[in-house]
Length: 113
Length: 114
Image (cartoon, rainbow over all chains, first blue to last red; front, top):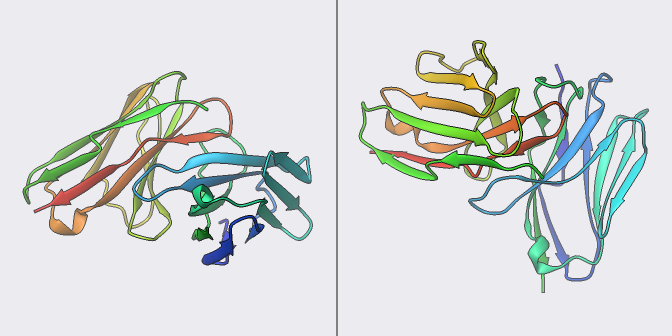
């Protein structure tokens, strides 16, 4: 089955700096890669996703890049703000409805004011 | 994004009793719902996948007779923790998926068994 690894497990950055979180996956059949943000005690929120037919997607301060050959994808947050502090999870799926998501172990991001 | 509502958000029950958790998709039809368990500072552990109108598929190590899942309609799935014990105390969270790969999470249920 699929195996998703996520690094780093914790990340601290100064406000205004950039944060990068990286994930790797093992199953070449995976073609849908969402990123979720989870604040303490709350639900994971889908913040951005990418499908395997594109290499990069951007939404304001958030971007995701995908390298299918190397089987890795990354989340980039620019101009970080304290409210970006949360746990971020990457996931991989084969994109078919009903097929499970394989989650990374999470990255706890702290943005220091 | 789509709205998924999960209730209750918190529940305390006595050991040996059963607890039902509901997960509803409010503005879309959820052909698939996933149930997860999350331990503090840990990732989401998939318990089972349920498709509307069919039996749930449980992950290895998850007792199907203890964690009863029903997905009777395209907008509602329920998880019943039967004969709950303190070790069942956890954060349970559902996610719902329609005809697209995106999945949206409910707000989670904090279960405490005393």
